[in-house]
Amino acid sequence: MYVGDVSAKIREMIWQQVSVLADEGNVVMAWATNTESGFEFQTFGVNRRIPVDLDGLRLVSFLPVENQ
Image 1 (spheres, rainbow, N blue to C red):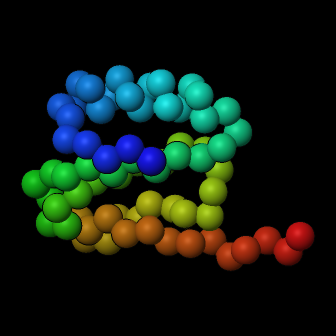
Image 2: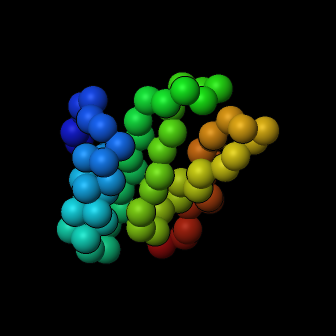
């Protein structure tokens, strides 16, 4: 986990590196912005968390746990 206040350009550079290094894992990156919720996020990789836009508000929907 990394928490910081970086520019959009640096955030994009970090995202490129993280998505390459994630291999078969998954990543979520969130940052402050001037949207209704005050933040934005993106995901990489297969996971149970699915970003959903609900009238401009970004929420996270969880898929059911698969039986193992």
